[in-house]
Amino acid sequence: MDHAAYGLAWLVFGLTHSALAGRTWFGRWSRIVYNVIATLQFLAVAALGAKLLGDRAVFVMPELARWSLGVVHLMGWGIVLASARFYDLGRLGGLTQLRHPELAPDEGLRTDGPHARLRHPLYAGAFLILWGAALSPLGLATACWGSLYLLIGTACEEHRLLRRYGEAYAEYRRRVPAFVPWRGLPLPLPPFCPNTSPATKGKGEVIMADGHSTPVLGIIGGSGVYDIDGLTNKEWRRIESPFGATSDEFLFGELNGQKLVFLPRHGRGHRIPPSELNFRANIDAMKRAGVTEILSVSAVGSLKEELPPGTFVIVDQFIDRTFARTKSFFETGLVAHVSMAHPVCGRLGDLVEAAAKEAGIICVRGGTYLVMEGPQFSTQAESNLYRQWGCDVIGMTNMPEAKLAREAEMCYASVAMVTDYDCWHPDHDAVTVDAIVKVLLANADRARSLVKTVAPKVTGRKAPCAKGCHTALDNAIITHGEVRDPAVVGRLDAVAGRVLKG
Figure 1: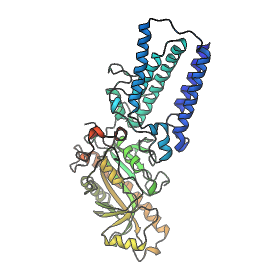
Figure 2 (figure 1 turned 180 degrees about the horizontal axis):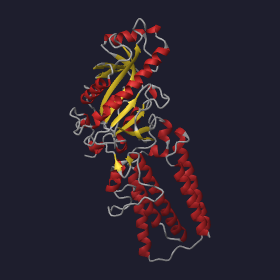
Figure 3 (figure 1 turned 90 degrees about the vertical axis):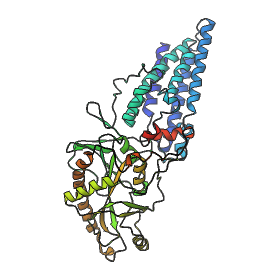
Figure 4 (figure 1 turned 120 degrees about the vertical axis):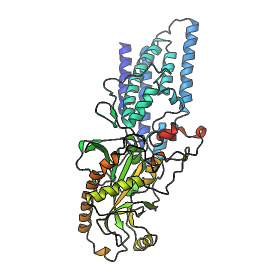
């Protein structure tokens, strides 16, 4: 009866621990609350075990066996302490999230250090600690119930990682064992934790994310473009990113038999202002979804008389005037510098231009997009200054989006949809809101028509990008391998996995 009660306590601990894992119900305090509850519950379980089984005599065993278990116990602690060096302990404890709530809640997929040999080195050490202390009925019961908890909890953690990282984690799982450095001992997923991922569809079909695979077109829709018409097999899916929450779920579907992924940049219903967009999470999740080419469509104001409302401009240059946004995936611990001399993919721009002509859309090839911080519009003095600089259109969303797409080695093209003239124009103040909304809706319809026309042209490509978009990181990373921050490397498994794993 005592053993059953002790086992029930472990069961309650395990269910609560699993239910709270990864939750963000308490905002920036979520990780700290999770750790406090887990610690208090574990102490309660330990106290109950000591009360029920603590007075039982230790097992009688040869001295050599006792010493051997002691060695196993110490080995377990050694593995745990050695593995802990590769984690951000502030993030694990929740203090980092408390001070910097804008950061992702975890460190991303870890495949370095001890994770190169074992998928779960901390749990492997915990097994040894538990069984090395099995010197009494209490120690043996703790080892049995604790091991069962670790096995089930790890299997569910595998399920979460497969859903979050898709094929990247599936490949890592095939290559690296769970607890024992022996490839012939895979960890099976229980029936309630199926082997699925957001990038998996149908009978094991996986959308690959490398530049040499079949191209997959991703659409980032700006103001007025919140869905894509004509998609079949549609499904909205959440894709998790180590860089935090994306603007919305992603719409997966097929357009004339071609795979397509769509993200409403501001969220459905236009919930998120430009300065609060999580550009890093959006681009990272696009890469995880298997997207190789991004077509960005966004509403802009015109800085030139010859670009009236309703005109589409295929942008080829940017002037970035934003100042409150994180503009790179790379940071202290892993430094990289990519070229932005030609910030968009010329090959993808050619396809968009051809599709626009085919769809009968008024389109201008080439133009400079001035990206302002917003959310306020520019002053008249600023508008005239930007005209003197030679800018063609002005908007708030294409930076750092284009820079991040380049760092992620993805082809990127921008279609700027003119809704009105900026405030430099003498007739600007006479334009009504109704007139602007009318143009905005008409532009959105034309944008959806453009997507339908360009999709088969993009997905018909078989070779890697001749403009070098898919190899942008070949010579960009300058931090030496031995001093790279494992936490940063882990977060970049999708964005820079091609070069970091090579």
